[in-house]
Length: 149
Image (tube, rainbow, N blue to C red; front, side, top):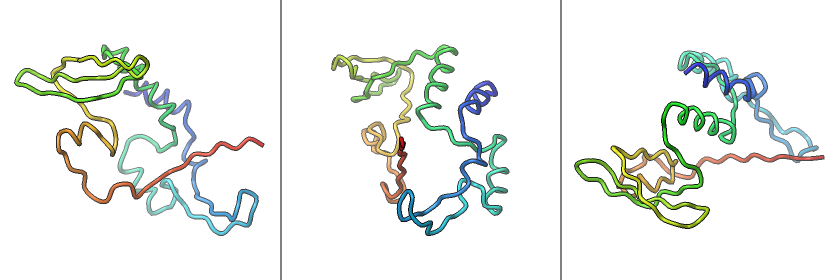
């Protein structure tokens, strides 16, 4: 809801501050070129504005995930961190999921009406279900580097 978006925006970098990718020989080296990115190019900005009622910003997963986790729990979700999906069995009444507590190494089961696999492109849930992903996997990448000088 709007409160989640407002909290996220408090921690995010606005689009104006993330407008270009710069290519250099080194950190202090000659600039080789730059290109508009993240929807700041006039052609893609219109597309971004039409695709969502929200403005684009940059909020790393390390900031967004706690906001979503807190909000989901406040609305009645029972959730755990440091827990790994191992396997599941579905029957006519629901799903029994085997999980692993990553701190103790112990396995336990959870019974639920359904299972949501929101575990990314290398999804073990999708693999166990035999769900295909379209296109070539592993072609994109991103890197965050923090420099202290």
